[in-house]
Image (tube, rainbow, N blue to C red; front, side, top):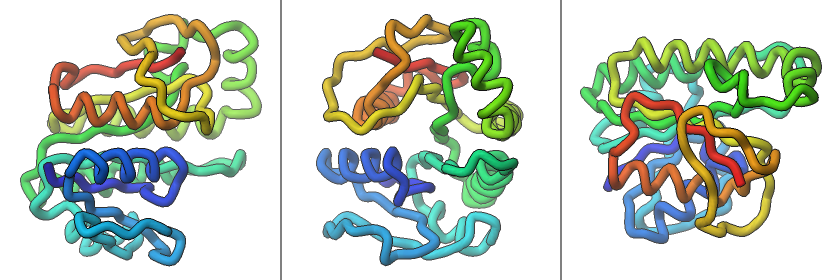
Length: 206
């Protein structure tokens, strides 16, 4: 499978990239700074560009079977990089007639809000308010895109090894507030193979 990964130098993006290469996919990593991507592989293609530049986005998407969006921001201040970047990706997919899209959002976004604990609702409504608003706008753009989309909503991301053991489903309750980035990547790659959750938003948690 030919897969384009946006946000490939982030921790979750790297997990997706490495696991995808390990299973034999041909991966195109879209990055702002190629020097930050310390991965070399014969099936890896790197496209340097800005997520808001249509030409470079289109170059990364052309000829792909699927696109995975792992865009994010570590800043707590107001950001629209997820929403606006995803809109750019959606346009690039339409221009290049690529239909399959998976994005990483967050547990608590959209209809999964009611699955959060009281303390997590507090943090999302205060400290993480900007991030949540960005995710909400991102998901809205995806749902209106007309593409074959799946939204993945992780609980708290941690840098632990892949287990392959996790709960995933629409609006499920989290047993814990943690999920390994490697398991998020595992779910995404399984979904790209099986395509059983097109048009759905899945929460993933331990």
